[in-house]
Amino acid sequence: MSARVLGVRSVEIEMTDPDRAADFFSRVWHLQEIARADGSIYFRGTGRYHHILAIHRAKTVALQRVVFDAANRDAVDRLCQQVRAKAAHCEDPHPLKGPGGGYGFGFTDPDSGNFAVVCDVADHADAGDIKDRHRKIAHVNLNVTNVKASGDFLIEGLGFKLVDESGPLSFFHADCTDHSSIVLGKAAKPTLNHVAFEMPDLDSTMRGAGRMRDNGYPIEWGVGRHGAGNNVFAYFAGPEEFPIECTGEVQQIDDSYVPHGPEYWKWPPGRLDQWGVTPPHTARWKRIQEMVPFTPGAWRL
Ligand SMILES: [Fe+2]
Image 1: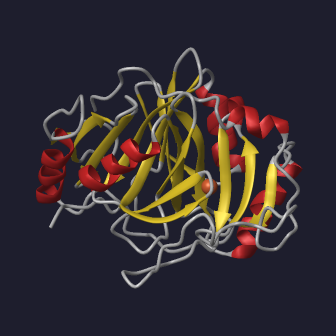
Image 2: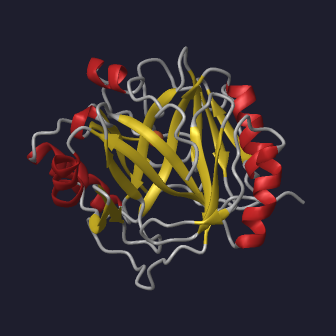
């Protein structure tokens, strides 16, 4: 049986003004700054992961990498063998020096995006929910040039399962109970669509959306409840227009889950969510959901 990642542990992003972004992510978005090192700033959610977001300084906004969690060193080593068989670039697993440490390796996907698999990070013992604070990354939605090729890479390299396909989007389930951790959609160029952060309950999700509006960040799409994944959503242009989603009540599944195709997930005309309340997304959201590229060549940890 192939080794499987447990989900998305963290995303590392690049911003032109990390201090300003840090103020947003702690004061408005409600993450907790946990470390600063070499000019980079690290944030935790309320879950166990040492950090779920790292902000590095750069000349333009970019997604540096998406980091997957693995159970232990044996799983990391096995995942490396699986990835290496399919990736253009894949380094050997090694001890990690950054905040939280750990053991892992970096690699590229078929679109030359940067990813990593890590374990043995100095995670937190206090991991209980706190209202109005995000637990973790719920999912990362990526625009890829070939959904079949990138999906096969997730399945054969990292042990994901394809759980649902709803029109433009394919949902990939990791070795956990969350419906999906990676979502793929087709685009002309590989970019980040958005990063979703998970609130512990419905009211926290809605208040998170309200807190954004209070602070001058209008809702670009939402609020509503998605079909696949059943999660409540509100989408925003964050600092430097970085596309982020505040989400909650993500569907929890097990091996008995029955995937569905695009016909099942089709909405009646004019409807965009289960409740029938969200208006269409804004032109700004359309623009920024295909705006952020991966940092070229940054695949080594
Ligand atoms: Fe999403």
